[in-house]
Amino acid sequence: MTTPRPEREDAYGGAPYGSYGPAFVGAGDPGTARMPAVDDYGGYGEYGPELPLDDRTMALRVPGAAEGAYGSLSASAGASGPGGATGGRAARRKAAKRGGGRHGGGTSAAADGPARPLSRVEARQQARARKPGAAVMVSRAVGELFITTGVVMLLFVTYQLWWTNVRAHAEAGSETSQLQDDWANGKRAPGVFEPGQGFAILHIPKLDVVAPIAEGVSNKNVLDKGMVGHYGEAPLKTAMPYDKTGNFGLAAHRNTHGEPFRYINRLVAGDAVVVETQDEYFVYKVASMLPVTPPSNTSVLNPVPTGSGFTRQGRYITLTTCTPEFTSKYRLIVWGKMVEERPRSKGKPDALIQ
Image (cartoon, rainbow, N blue to C red; front, side):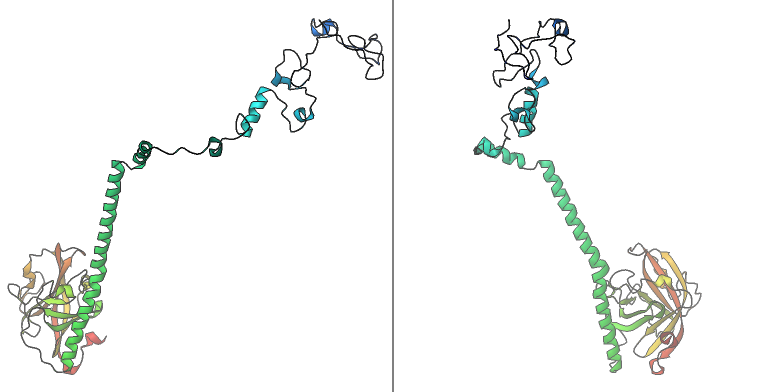
């Protein structure tokens, strides 16, 4: 059933609409429009269906069509114009999401109100949750132990490789200067020396070595002070340079503590080794070398040292040190034979002038 409508003029100045719409003319009239018939809309009626009024917007709606499909036909410009929401429920949901919530506003702490204070039980639970577990504590302890060990090892290596050399060079230099001052001042040295007492100076020109020679081979009293030690005590007692025959045996560090014998492995046959005393210079020439031998091989200090190539009594010198470097597993031996005995009154030998 259709609702009667008042008659009004045609919008284009034509005849009045009548009860249900404008007067229609024939299809042949090109100046008029034709409303759809029954066949055009499949049984809508002669003039089409009645379009119901929207209760909220007073806009026309197509029956059966979803609101979101066609949108609102509101006459309000704010609803259908640019910037307005033109969709149905789906459009409103999207707009609500873009606005931060269903009611158009985002959630915030201010909207939710002030936070509730934690109870003691909740506070304890959170504290326990923040406390690291046993595995974490163990890993931290192990890490700190490794770091501490590394630092200690680094300090030890620095002490061994650097500080011991600094200290030994200072002590050896002081002893050398003291010997030279005593000789220059005419202070006589005894013929027999106490352990640790300096009595001569060793020169190895090829290696730029100048080191005091002291009695004995004690690490604490001689070798660790950067000095060269003389095997002067039994059972390894060797000759002195001024003896008419014999083997003058010496020992020194190859690494750390001044390391005066570090590079004696570079000596070759014919290189000079000079022993300076209060009255004379004793010049030796390198004759042979034993690169590796056990520490127990004391025969290298014999009056005619075994393995040196010497076959009869003479005036020899033997230099002994550890090998390989930074170990004391084996010994390196260098032998020399005296070729010149020169009084100090005649000046330095040629080996120390070149």
